[in-house]
Amino acid sequence: MSKEFENTDDLSLEDFRLLAEAWRAGRGRSSSAKRMAQHPAYREIVSMGQSAVPFIIRELKRQPDHWFVALHAITGIDPVSEPDRGNIAAMARAWIEWAEQTGIDIHDAE
Image (cartoon, rainbow, N blue to C red; front, side, top):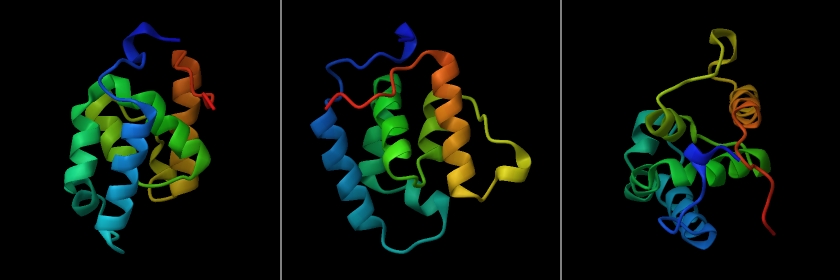
């Protein structure tokens, strides 16, 4: 696993799941990524920094969703190609591939 993105005590899997569910429940049916990223639970996940990345990637594997703003804010990169922008499944695949190439442990701990 990349040392840079190791899980720390800053964020447990349970904490992440609770925040992710609060975000999903509170964001409504917005199609605006910017608006979704302004939700307090989403911002709290982003504030956890690099320790959140493995959880987010695992969540993308389980259920692709709008985690891309968070990943970009935390990592400073964007592995999504221009033709894939707007395609949630393709964007998720790009981030999952990036994580695998980076050495981030993206296998479920359960």
